[in-house]
Image 1: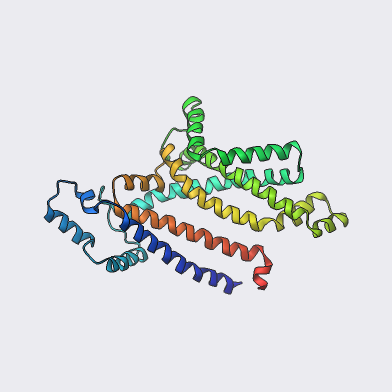
Image 2: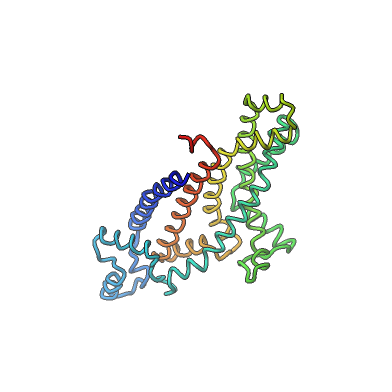
Length: 311
Protein backbone atom coordinates (compact mmCIF):
# COMPACT_ATOMS: atom_id res chain seq x y z
CA UNK A 1 0.00 0.00 0.00
CA UNK A 2 2.72 2.47 1.00
CA UNK A 3 4.72 1.63 -2.14
CA UNK A 4 1.73 2.32 -4.40
CA UNK A 5 1.01 5.65 -2.70
CA UNK A 6 4.68 6.63 -2.97
CA UNK A 7 4.73 5.75 -6.68
CA UNK A 8 1.63 7.88 -7.30
CA UNK A 9 3.27 10.80 -5.51
CA UNK A 10 6.45 10.41 -7.57
CA UNK A 11 4.35 10.33 -10.76
CA UNK A 12 2.86 13.70 -9.79
CA UNK A 13 6.28 15.41 -9.93
CA UNK A 14 6.78 15.30 -13.75
CA UNK A 15 3.10 16.19 -14.18
CA UNK A 16 3.56 19.31 -12.05
CA UNK A 17 6.78 20.14 -13.92
CA UNK A 18 4.94 19.89 -17.24
CA UNK A 19 2.15 22.12 -15.91
CA UNK A 20 4.68 24.74 -14.76
CA UNK A 21 6.38 24.62 -18.15
CA UNK A 22 3.08 25.22 -19.93
CA UNK A 23 2.33 28.13 -17.58
CA UNK A 24 5.73 29.69 -18.32
CA UNK A 25 5.38 29.31 -22.09
CA UNK A 26 1.78 30.55 -22.18
CA UNK A 27 2.52 33.71 -20.20
CA UNK A 28 5.51 34.52 -22.41
CA UNK A 29 3.27 34.21 -25.50
CA UNK A 30 0.78 36.79 -24.26
CA UNK A 31 0.76 40.03 -26.32
CA UNK A 32 2.06 43.23 -24.76
CA UNK A 33 5.12 44.31 -22.83
CA UNK A 34 5.01 43.76 -19.05
CA UNK A 35 7.24 46.80 -18.54
CA UNK A 36 4.86 49.09 -20.42
CA UNK A 37 1.88 47.53 -18.64
CA UNK A 38 3.50 48.22 -15.27
CA UNK A 39 5.00 51.69 -15.89
CA UNK A 40 2.56 53.05 -18.46
CA UNK A 41 2.90 54.20 -22.05
CA UNK A 42 4.72 57.41 -21.10
CA UNK A 43 7.65 55.71 -19.36
CA UNK A 44 11.05 56.56 -20.75
CA UNK A 45 13.22 53.91 -22.44
CA UNK A 46 15.64 54.11 -19.51
CA UNK A 47 12.86 53.40 -17.02
CA UNK A 48 11.59 50.48 -19.11
CA UNK A 49 15.07 49.01 -19.40
CA UNK A 50 15.67 49.39 -15.65
CA UNK A 51 12.35 47.67 -14.92
CA UNK A 52 13.16 44.76 -17.26
CA UNK A 53 16.52 44.35 -15.55
CA UNK A 54 14.95 44.37 -12.07
CA UNK A 55 12.31 41.83 -13.09
CA UNK A 56 14.78 39.63 -14.99
CA UNK A 57 12.94 40.12 -18.28
CA UNK A 58 16.19 40.93 -20.10
CA UNK A 59 17.59 37.46 -19.41
CA UNK A 60 17.45 34.68 -22.03
CA UNK A 61 14.30 32.58 -21.88
CA UNK A 62 16.07 29.48 -20.58
CA UNK A 63 17.47 31.48 -17.64
CA UNK A 64 14.04 33.01 -16.99
CA UNK A 65 12.61 29.48 -16.95
CA UNK A 66 14.98 28.22 -14.26
CA UNK A 67 14.50 31.39 -12.22
CA UNK A 68 10.75 30.80 -12.50
CA UNK A 69 11.09 27.20 -11.29
CA UNK A 70 13.27 28.28 -8.38
CA UNK A 71 10.75 30.96 -7.41
CA UNK A 72 7.98 28.34 -7.40
CA UNK A 73 10.03 25.95 -5.25
CA UNK A 74 10.89 28.72 -2.77
CA UNK A 75 7.36 30.21 -2.95
CA UNK A 76 8.83 33.58 -3.92
CA UNK A 77 6.56 35.10 -6.56
CA UNK A 78 7.82 38.65 -6.20
CA UNK A 79 5.64 41.74 -5.84
CA UNK A 80 2.51 42.85 -7.64
CA UNK A 81 3.17 45.38 -10.40
CA UNK A 82 0.01 47.29 -9.58
CA UNK A 83 -0.38 47.27 -5.80
CA UNK A 84 3.29 46.71 -4.82
CA UNK A 85 2.14 44.09 -2.30
CA UNK A 86 3.85 40.74 -2.04
CA UNK A 87 2.24 38.22 -4.41
CA UNK A 88 2.48 35.58 -1.70
CA UNK A 89 0.50 37.79 0.66
CA UNK A 90 -2.18 38.39 -1.98
CA UNK A 91 -2.48 34.66 -2.66
CA UNK A 92 -2.64 33.85 1.06
CA UNK A 93 -5.34 36.49 1.50
CA UNK A 94 -7.60 35.37 -1.37
CA UNK A 95 -7.00 31.61 -1.59
CA UNK A 96 -8.99 30.62 1.56
CA UNK A 97 -12.18 32.10 0.07
CA UNK A 98 -11.81 29.94 -3.05
CA UNK A 99 -10.98 26.80 -1.05
CA UNK A 100 -13.96 27.20 1.28
CA UNK A 101 -16.27 27.82 -1.70
CA UNK A 102 -15.01 24.68 -3.48
CA UNK A 103 -15.29 22.48 -0.38
CA UNK A 104 -18.74 23.77 0.57
CA UNK A 105 -20.07 23.40 -2.99
CA UNK A 106 -18.73 19.84 -3.30
CA UNK A 107 -20.20 18.85 0.07
CA UNK A 108 -23.60 20.26 -0.86
CA UNK A 109 -23.48 18.66 -4.30
CA UNK A 110 -22.47 15.24 -2.96
CA UNK A 111 -25.09 15.29 -0.20
CA UNK A 112 -27.79 16.06 -2.77
CA UNK A 113 -26.48 13.81 -5.55
CA UNK A 114 -25.94 10.44 -3.87
CA UNK A 115 -29.50 10.02 -2.51
CA UNK A 116 -30.99 11.27 -5.79
CA UNK A 117 -28.86 8.87 -7.82
CA UNK A 118 -29.70 5.90 -5.59
CA UNK A 119 -33.44 6.69 -5.68
CA UNK A 120 -33.37 7.08 -9.47
CA UNK A 121 -31.51 3.79 -9.94
CA UNK A 122 -33.72 1.78 -7.59
CA UNK A 123 -36.93 3.24 -9.07
CA UNK A 124 -35.97 3.08 -12.70
CA UNK A 125 -38.72 4.22 -15.07
CA UNK A 126 -40.85 5.72 -12.29
CA UNK A 127 -41.61 9.35 -11.52
CA UNK A 128 -38.64 9.72 -9.14
CA UNK A 129 -36.29 8.53 -11.87
CA UNK A 130 -37.82 10.89 -14.43
CA UNK A 131 -37.58 13.83 -12.03
CA UNK A 132 -33.92 13.12 -11.31
CA UNK A 133 -33.10 12.89 -15.01
CA UNK A 134 -34.89 16.19 -15.69
CA UNK A 135 -32.95 17.81 -12.84
CA UNK A 136 -29.68 16.47 -14.25
CA UNK A 137 -30.56 17.70 -17.74
CA UNK A 138 -31.32 21.19 -16.45
CA UNK A 139 -28.09 21.19 -14.47
CA UNK A 140 -26.14 20.41 -17.63
CA UNK A 141 -28.00 23.03 -19.65
CA UNK A 142 -27.88 26.02 -17.29
CA UNK A 143 -24.52 27.89 -17.20
CA UNK A 144 -23.07 28.59 -13.78
CA UNK A 145 -22.94 32.37 -14.29
CA UNK A 146 -26.62 32.46 -15.34
CA UNK A 147 -27.74 30.41 -12.34
CA UNK A 148 -25.55 32.54 -10.06
CA UNK A 149 -27.07 35.76 -11.36
CA UNK A 150 -30.57 34.32 -10.96
CA UNK A 151 -29.88 33.24 -7.38
CA UNK A 152 -28.41 36.65 -6.59
CA UNK A 153 -31.45 38.48 -7.93
CA UNK A 154 -34.03 36.26 -6.23
CA UNK A 155 -32.50 35.46 -2.83
CA UNK A 156 -30.18 38.42 -2.25
CA UNK A 157 -31.76 41.42 -4.01
CA UNK A 158 -35.48 40.61 -3.85
CA UNK A 159 -35.81 38.52 -0.68
CA UNK A 160 -32.78 39.89 1.14
CA UNK A 161 -31.95 36.53 2.75
CA UNK A 162 -28.26 36.63 1.83
CA UNK A 163 -25.61 39.34 1.36
CA UNK A 164 -25.18 40.73 -2.13
CA UNK A 165 -21.37 40.72 -2.18
CA UNK A 166 -18.24 40.24 -0.09
CA UNK A 167 -16.71 37.36 1.83
CA UNK A 168 -17.61 38.19 5.42
CA UNK A 169 -15.49 38.87 8.49
CA UNK A 170 -16.04 36.49 11.41
CA UNK A 171 -16.90 32.78 11.06
CA UNK A 172 -20.71 33.02 10.96
CA UNK A 173 -20.63 36.08 8.72
CA UNK A 174 -18.37 34.21 6.29
CA UNK A 175 -20.73 31.24 6.32
CA UNK A 176 -23.63 33.60 5.59
CA UNK A 177 -21.77 35.07 2.61
CA UNK A 178 -20.70 31.59 1.49
CA UNK A 179 -24.11 29.89 1.57
CA UNK A 180 -25.67 31.24 -1.64
CA UNK A 181 -22.64 30.94 -4.00
CA UNK A 182 -21.85 27.47 -2.59
CA UNK A 183 -25.46 26.36 -3.05
CA UNK A 184 -25.38 27.66 -6.63
CA UNK A 185 -22.33 25.60 -7.51
CA UNK A 186 -23.61 22.67 -5.42
CA UNK A 187 -26.79 22.41 -7.51
CA UNK A 188 -24.75 22.15 -10.70
CA UNK A 189 -22.44 19.53 -9.19
CA UNK A 190 -25.43 17.57 -7.88
CA UNK A 191 -26.91 17.42 -11.37
CA UNK A 192 -23.78 15.80 -12.79
CA UNK A 193 -23.09 13.50 -9.85
CA UNK A 194 -26.69 12.27 -9.52
CA UNK A 195 -26.74 11.20 -13.16
CA UNK A 196 -23.36 9.50 -12.76
CA UNK A 197 -24.48 7.72 -9.57
CA UNK A 198 -27.66 6.52 -11.27
CA UNK A 199 -25.88 5.09 -14.32
CA UNK A 200 -23.07 3.52 -12.27
CA UNK A 201 -25.45 1.93 -9.75
CA UNK A 202 -27.76 0.64 -12.50
CA UNK A 203 -24.82 -1.13 -14.11
CA UNK A 204 -23.76 -2.71 -10.81
CA UNK A 205 -27.31 -3.82 -9.90
CA UNK A 206 -27.37 -6.02 -13.00
CA UNK A 207 -24.33 -8.04 -11.88
CA UNK A 208 -24.59 -11.68 -10.84
CA UNK A 209 -23.39 -11.09 -7.28
CA UNK A 210 -26.31 -8.68 -6.71
CA UNK A 211 -28.79 -11.35 -7.79
CA UNK A 212 -26.97 -13.83 -5.56
CA UNK A 213 -27.19 -11.48 -2.56
CA UNK A 214 -30.93 -11.06 -3.15
CA UNK A 215 -31.41 -14.82 -3.58
CA UNK A 216 -29.77 -15.40 -0.19
CA UNK A 217 -32.50 -13.31 1.40
CA UNK A 218 -30.52 -10.16 2.01
CA UNK A 219 -32.51 -7.06 2.80
CA UNK A 220 -32.91 -4.76 -0.18
CA UNK A 221 -31.38 -1.77 1.60
CA UNK A 222 -28.33 -3.83 2.55
CA UNK A 223 -28.00 -5.14 -1.00
CA UNK A 224 -28.24 -1.64 -2.45
CA UNK A 225 -25.79 0.10 -0.15
CA UNK A 226 -23.36 -2.63 0.90
CA UNK A 227 -23.05 -4.53 -2.37
CA UNK A 228 -24.35 -2.09 -4.97
CA UNK A 229 -23.24 1.41 -4.06
CA UNK A 230 -19.94 0.22 -2.64
CA UNK A 231 -18.97 -1.39 -5.94
CA UNK A 232 -20.22 1.62 -7.91
CA UNK A 233 -17.88 4.01 -6.08
CA UNK A 234 -15.01 3.88 -8.58
CA UNK A 235 -16.69 5.88 -11.39
CA UNK A 236 -18.38 8.05 -8.76
CA UNK A 237 -14.97 8.88 -7.27
CA UNK A 238 -13.76 9.81 -10.76
CA UNK A 239 -16.79 12.05 -11.15
CA UNK A 240 -16.09 13.67 -7.79
CA UNK A 241 -12.56 14.48 -8.89
CA UNK A 242 -13.72 15.95 -12.18
CA UNK A 243 -16.42 17.91 -10.37
CA UNK A 244 -13.86 19.30 -7.93
CA UNK A 245 -11.72 20.56 -10.81
CA UNK A 246 -14.80 21.98 -12.55
CA UNK A 247 -15.80 23.67 -9.30
CA UNK A 248 -12.38 25.30 -9.04
CA UNK A 249 -12.73 26.70 -12.55
CA UNK A 250 -16.42 27.53 -12.06
CA UNK A 251 -15.59 29.42 -8.88
CA UNK A 252 -14.05 32.17 -11.01
CA UNK A 253 -17.42 33.11 -12.54
CA UNK A 254 -19.26 32.70 -9.24
CA UNK A 255 -16.73 34.87 -7.41
CA UNK A 256 -17.18 37.59 -10.01
CA UNK A 257 -20.98 37.45 -9.81
CA UNK A 258 -21.09 37.47 -6.00
CA UNK A 259 -18.03 39.76 -5.76
CA UNK A 260 -16.21 37.33 -3.46
CA UNK A 261 -12.55 38.16 -2.72
CA UNK A 262 -11.34 34.78 -3.95
CA UNK A 263 -8.42 33.70 -6.09
CA UNK A 264 -10.50 33.75 -9.28
CA UNK A 265 -11.49 37.37 -8.71
CA UNK A 266 -7.86 38.25 -8.02
CA UNK A 267 -6.69 36.45 -11.18
CA UNK A 268 -9.24 38.16 -13.43
CA UNK A 269 -8.23 41.55 -12.06
CA UNK A 270 -4.57 40.73 -12.65
CA UNK A 271 -5.29 39.74 -16.27
CA UNK A 272 -7.17 43.00 -16.89
CA UNK A 273 -4.30 45.05 -15.43
CA UNK A 274 -1.50 42.94 -16.95
CA UNK A 275 -0.14 42.18 -13.48
CA UNK A 276 2.15 39.38 -14.64
CA UNK A 277 3.53 38.23 -11.24
CA UNK A 278 0.00 37.82 -9.84
CA UNK A 279 -1.18 36.12 -13.04
CA UNK A 280 1.75 33.73 -12.93
CA UNK A 281 1.26 32.86 -9.26
CA UNK A 282 -2.52 32.43 -9.62
CA UNK A 283 -2.20 30.08 -12.58
CA UNK A 284 0.52 28.09 -10.78
CA UNK A 285 -1.78 27.67 -7.75
CA UNK A 286 -4.64 26.45 -9.96
CA UNK A 287 -2.28 24.05 -11.74
CA UNK A 288 -1.06 22.77 -8.38
CA UNK A 289 -4.61 22.02 -7.27
CA UNK A 290 -5.33 20.18 -10.53
CA UNK A 291 -2.31 17.93 -9.97
CA UNK A 292 -3.19 17.54 -6.28
CA UNK A 293 -6.77 16.47 -7.03
CA UNK A 294 -5.58 13.92 -9.59
CA UNK A 295 -3.04 12.58 -7.10
CA UNK A 296 -5.76 12.29 -4.45
CA UNK A 297 -7.92 10.38 -6.96
CA UNK A 298 -5.14 7.91 -7.68
CA UNK A 299 -4.69 7.29 -3.95
CA UNK A 300 -8.46 6.92 -3.43
CA UNK A 301 -8.55 4.31 -6.22
CA UNK A 302 -6.00 2.24 -4.29
CA UNK A 303 -8.28 2.11 -1.24
CA UNK A 304 -11.53 1.61 -3.16
CA UNK A 305 -10.47 -1.04 -5.65
CA UNK A 306 -8.59 -4.07 -4.22
CA UNK A 307 -7.63 -5.12 -7.77
CA UNK A 308 -5.20 -2.20 -8.02
CA UNK A 309 -3.44 -3.34 -4.83
CA UNK A 310 -3.26 -6.94 -6.07
CA UNK A 311 -1.77 -5.87 -9.40
